[in-house]
Image 1 (cartoon, protein in one colour):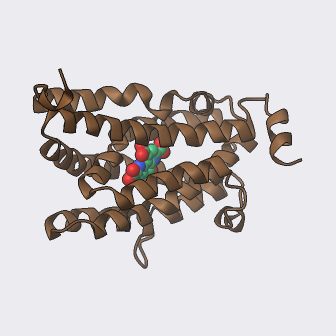
Image 2 (tube, rainbow, N blue to C red):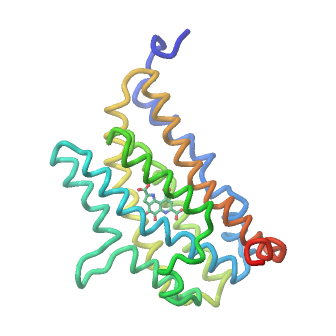
Length: 246
Ligand SMILES: O=C(O)c1cc(C(=O)O)c2c(n1)C(=O)C(=O)c1cc(C(=O)O)[nH]c1-2
């Protein structure tokens, strides 16, 4: 039977199928598994922080693009908070600044991170693909693509639980970013799920939503693939670094 005549999933079934995508989340990527179980070297943790900074600075740009495609103020009012979460306000800094505090806590200098000089091409490519999708897709599809945040609190909590023990050399002041995201991600997801469950109605549309979520999961996964090529995993990193910096 063709997709467009298949019976739509109930809202509950649709939500369950979106949530079932957790199995493809980057928490299961070998680089993340190594990082969260204390197997990464200092250089690898620093490499992750440097590369993820590009994601951090592009998220509010992505969100501004999505907001520009939202025709009504009810959604923009909620969405604008995502930009403020990252950019902050004068006297009340946001996620980008918190990420720079994490960078300093792992022994990097702000300038080194802000320069983006060490961001690996694959990470740039993956993040740019996400921003480009969000900028050009119908806004409800862009909202749907942010739903990897369904799975993010678990990964932030995992870092908060395991990093202090595994990486005692990281200054504890660096963990504020992960702490902040626990509640921010839950709030984002409430809005994101409401939009997605209401917008994707037919079975074909619901399947498209699942594919959009998979695309975003692939973005996150590809970022770590690129980091793994550059930095290796665990102690076995020499060849990889030599390839990047001959
Ligand atoms: O550290 C992570 O694993 C992780 C994952 C994700 C995600 O799942 O997309 C986000 C974040 N962090 C994050 O901090 C964040 O602000 C964020 C925004 C978005 C988005 O798609 O709009 N995802 C994520």
